Amino acid sequence: WPSYGYDAGGGRFSPLTQITPDNVNKLQVAWTYHMNPIPSQKLARVPFATTTPLVVGNRIFLGTPYGRVVALDSTRGKQLWAYDLPTGDQPPFRGLGYWPGDKSHAPRLIFGTLRGRMIALDAKTGAPSKGFGVDGVVDTRTPEIMNDLPNAFYGYSAPPTVANGVVYAPNQDGHIRAFDAKTGAVVWDYDAGAMTYDTVNGVKEQRGANFDGSGMAFAGDMAFTMSGYNG
Image (cartoon, rainbow, N blue to C red; front, side, top):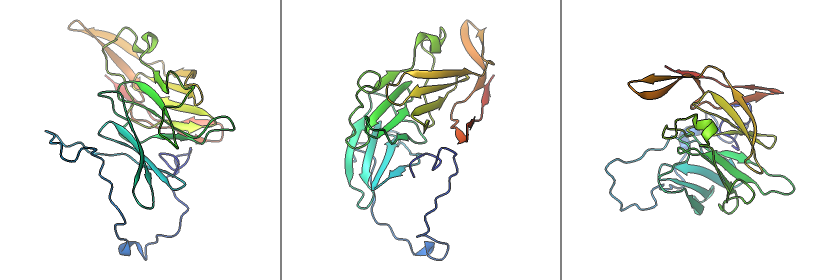
């Protein structure tokens, strides 16, 4: 299961046949992984997870509500590595993106964060990917993107779709941006053209189309996504 929707088309269908309607009631728990790195820690509010794990080979990749991305052995549930996001940041609620790499680049996990970063990790080691942004991190909260709203919320709650070496990331500002999976540079920027800015009680607010939480699906040379509306 190498993509949030199984494939770039978002088919959400697995061709595996080992589990069937006839034997599903015989499944038993093989292992359990606890996401909380400090089980004894008492939290006022217990975080919850809504992520869809990725499975590539014998590895499971997922983000946790504790500000971490982890890799697990899919057979034993053993943690292979863990990456702690910068203080206070979180991986997207719904899942991660996976790029298989090429002749010069090892496979990567690529994802946006709730604080507007785009991060790439080496899928084998969990280390930040060299050559992608600065030490594996691209800060997408640029002046151009924030549009004179430097303190506004800008982050990613949905996993990007990765296809043909490009990372596609719709967001709440009415844009879909494509990033180079190797360098993190913006390849193109689609503007829905419907975002306006109003001042209400002295506070500047944005109104218009947004793609917050939207993934993308590809069919041939066409891409599809859904939009909402801020208003």
